[in-house]
Length: 560
Image (spheres, rainbow, N blue to C red):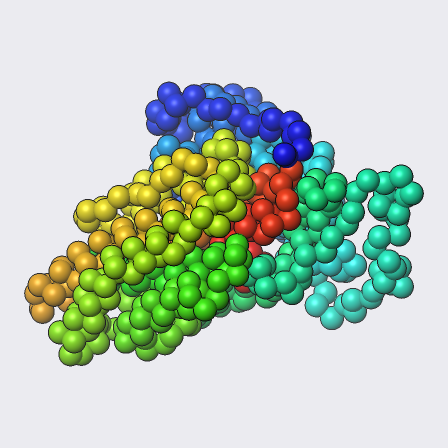
């Protein structure tokens, strides 16, 4: 029996609001709330006052249908701070708008957007942590990636990297002393899960409060793998020095998907058109990575739920290894591929091509039997069904408010996939379906991933057919890209791809040089992990572990 939980305060957006509005219509809708206009690539930008953020966002959400806060980007200029809320529609992500909120240089304070979009909670905490903007009214404004004792904000212009970091003795005090759980009449118990528990898929510390055996509060303590990826990208050149880094965000087989996210943003920024032949290679490679990622997700999920290592986990690793061998043939690497280039890919398919095609076809042909085996061992397993059906429930409107994407939101019945809804690569030319389940529970998220493997196999097979018959004289693997890229000053873009775990987006602001002035990574795992308390409160500890496993997070991408 679960604890009584209040119904979450989330909007139900009218489907009629999916109708596209022009920038002028949006300006009329915002009225006096918009004090200026900006033109970002692919999205109109509206500048609003920091004390009117919520009014503007509520109006865009409830009256224009922008129900997806995809990303929040914060940055500091010479004369101001700025927060940008990148809004899209789940029904049509090609409809985008940016809400730009400047804040005073001497007092960077802006009103929080958390009452409008629950996902703004963590995004604004990250902006406060790294840039230093204070979000007034935020329910829990404190650092999220760096420890509370950290001195300064690493992405601020005056940040001193040589400043010593001092931890006071107070920080070593017993963390339980001041808590209610020390009181004699307290009914709750505090439980640490992690940061080294095998079920956490990385270095994650889950602070859990129990009432008896039921979870009443969950706090995800992240940041153990923060590696300053955004700062490193801002120090690299567009053409040559950034591409090796994306492989390291979601390092669990998703490298080409990560590379595509950066490539799509930079190619839009520099107006680069990728040849069809290279697009097909990209599409094939990306779907191979998706299968490898889902195999790992399914295997570790079974390991989390009922500890099956010898059969299911090793079977999944066996099939993942087959994909890794194909990707190694294609890219020359097993994990950190660095295969995409702006404008295409670094080299053509391996020779002899016939052997490579045969290897890919053999893998795809064997997949139906392997997937049936997974259904027999996993989805048909009575223990797993008892542990996952009707546990970790995430209603669709709650998932959307948290900015959940990928199998997490599709497992809640939300039909949202950027490959189809915001087409890129060669996906629009191929025959495939989006996998959606409406159970909203841990079991549905498992089924979505298994079904997506089938769809990825369809895509790969069609790509092989196209590549096999492609005229030899027309095998162009790269567009003609200038040696040095210098996008115009103040050009801004947010572009995203459908990575294995959801919407992986990149925001770039150019300053006229060959390096980005701002590079923001929108990680699907970061937003998806926010939903853990919604799925776990009122459940038991084993159910929380199953819910965490069903999210398929990788902490390298959460922390970046």
